Image 1 (cartoon, rainbow, N blue to C red):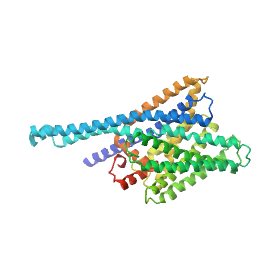
Image 2 (cartoon, rainbow, N blue to C red; image 1 turned 90 degrees about the vertical axis):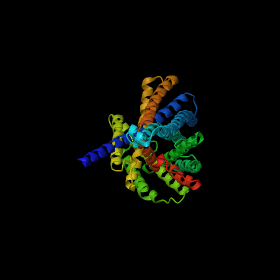
Image 3 (tube, helix red, strand yellow; image 1 turned 90 degrees about the horizontal axis):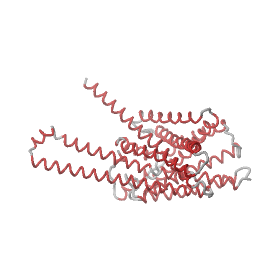
Image 4 (cartoon, one colour; image 1 turned 45 degrees about the vertical axis):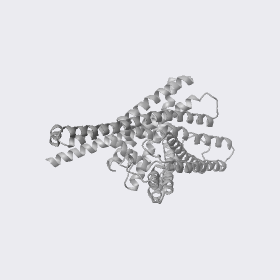
Length: 455
């Protein structure tokens, strides 16, 4: 009877952990992308009537989002340190209380009052967990805030691509256009290599609460990382157009796009599962290179996959936007099933195939939500402000952004501590460049202890 009850409790606990993990996964990969896309839309809207070139307009949008991200950082960092200080104070008060109790009463009297010596430990543990929830929530929030900057930064490569196409409009076979797209990709890659090494060398990189300069560098680093993947995707688009002969053709060719998607899917799967995992990790530079090429590979694939998927639903399927959102829900359910059979790891593993699938699924959800919500924001603006007046559009976009930020903050503040710690570890392990190498870099310098990220 007791064993049956224990088994039932274990199943219930595992189910609760799966639910808590799902909430965090949705917050990380859906709510954060909704918030970041809304912030990017707001930044562009503010400067939309200035008559500036698209490149300058997007750069100003990035600066606005940088300011917004800094404000959010200051709030989250302040609350993090306040919760941390309260946790330390509570621990100190508990020790003082225990000392007074031991002076006033004998051990037997303490046990009599508390029921057992374990009661003190339970009280301390509960206090720590209550404050720890808030601390970890703000830490998790700080880790996701760079996406407010990343999204508008990634909008710049398409603008540069459009400028290249316009400048070399008379290039019939796309040779010159392809060369300039290759140069754009290499420029982003070289800058990203420098930024990744710089960020990984900082003593507080990857900390639960980074300093403001490190936080800004983290955001810029990941912005260039994503832009490198985007520029590689744009280079692939030029190569596709050169092979298929679809330059200046706006029609969505379903058969050609299906073949393109299949080829890229198989190539990406092969690289993520069978090639990149075999790269050596002897030192920090090796770890950075491995993480970087893995992330750029999956980013480039996800940009292409989601773009083709969106065009398919938007142009060819009746009520396509609704069915597209249904597909995003199905993708999230796939992640839940993956976690069920991967020891609650929503990003897959421990097998290479499982990790590869989880990584591709994660970014299909992230970028898929990004594409769809950008259209939703455009539809909201068109419905709420049909004449396109800037100030009302700013108010509408700001209200949407404020609502999404509030919901996301509440999830992180009141979410489950263990689920957020595990999600942060799994996400950084499979996704973020520089994060994987930071632990070894710090240990090389001064040694490192196990932290929340290493649960």
